[in-house]
Structures are given as structure tokens and as C-alpha cells.
Amino acid sequence: MGIQDIIDGKRQWRAHMARVKALPPDYRIVYREMQGYLFKVGPVDLLDGPVLSGIVDFFEEGAAEGKGVLELVGDDVAAFCDGLIEASPAHRESVGEK
Image (cartoon, helix red, strand yellow):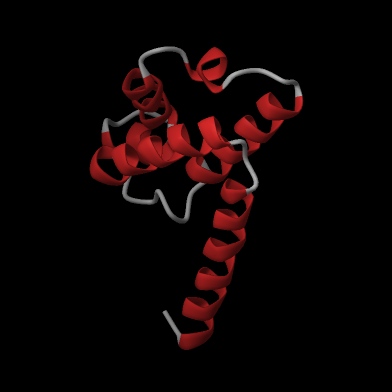
């Protein structure tokens, strides 16, 4: 990984976090909880993979439709995150699925 890769990664992360900050307050709270949970138990390619950006996409759509965040993820946010982990390519490879 070269310097330019680090700079590009940082730029992408800042753009990602700017999208998170633009979400309604309840969405931001749930996103941060999900992010913390996924950082602890999620796939190793979490930062490079589509999981976090997919959550933001999903949340932006839900907010645009006027839905509450818990309407999207349900009352058990950890179970929702576990479903995301199980669906991630890194998890499927680790358990031998294709």
C-alpha cells in the first residue's frame, strides 16, 4: 500500500462520513451503533467492502421515503448486523460457501 492509496482511502472515508453526517439524527445514532458492532465482529474487509456504504445507501433511501430507522432495521439492530455479516462475501468465503 503506497502513500497515494492511503490518501485515497482517507478521502473516501471522509466522503463516507460526510454522507453519514447528512442523515437524520436517529439514523446517525443507529449507524454509529452498527458501525461499532461491525468493527468488533464484522468481516475483515469491512472498510474496503460494500457493507458500510450499503448501509448508508439504504439509510438515505429510507430517510428520503420518510421512514423511521427502526422501520428499516427492526428493533434488534445487532441481529440486523449479523444478517449483513452472513451475507458478506468475506463471511461466505470463511465458511466455505460460494
